[in-house]
Length: 263
Image 1 (tube, rainbow, N blue to C red):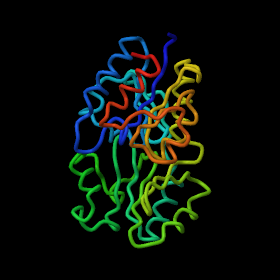
Image 2: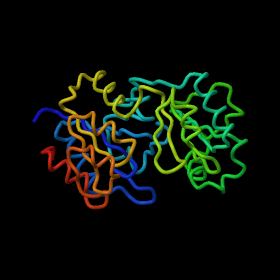
Image 3: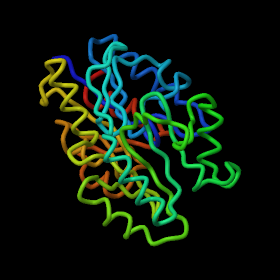
């Protein structure tokens, strides 16, 4: 079989917070690499938020992070498209105007706003980031040169549609649940990240497989030659997939790799 490049989402696909990666998934990813295929992480998380344990230690050829704005292969950065100063200032101004809690996500640091967050204990996600990255979680007020690729918000006390409209000309808005959304620069997505990675490595689109589960995986499931949705995936992801495998804790990744003859 010709070498394939397989792009795996993390959350809800490979890994569920607080639970180990399934042994069958680890076995499948290591086996496809032994067979000569390439395995990549393709995530909405920024690079600094991709943990060595329990994710990278499985063994991957590369990482596409921050919804396609960053990519590395064999631990070498191949592309990186950070926000411009004008872009993140527009974001910060808008989020503050509508009193939305936000973070700016970079390859090395995550930035939060002290004016919008009084106490980490009030938000489980901020507590999680602070615990995971105690030295890489910085207040925007104390950073003169922010290096971020995207943003995420939790609009707790406002109608988020106003925020989406205000930033919609410059950013793709990916709403996960009401008021919880990611903002990615126009033109970038997980699909764009796959395209850039394939261009850099000389991989044909006909040799790509994407595996995901949620709204921010839809574009890559459509873009790759084969789009695989996990059995636990969202309705939009399932509707655009070429194949629906079993759930994350039902050996879904293993079954998908076996189904397409990669094992």
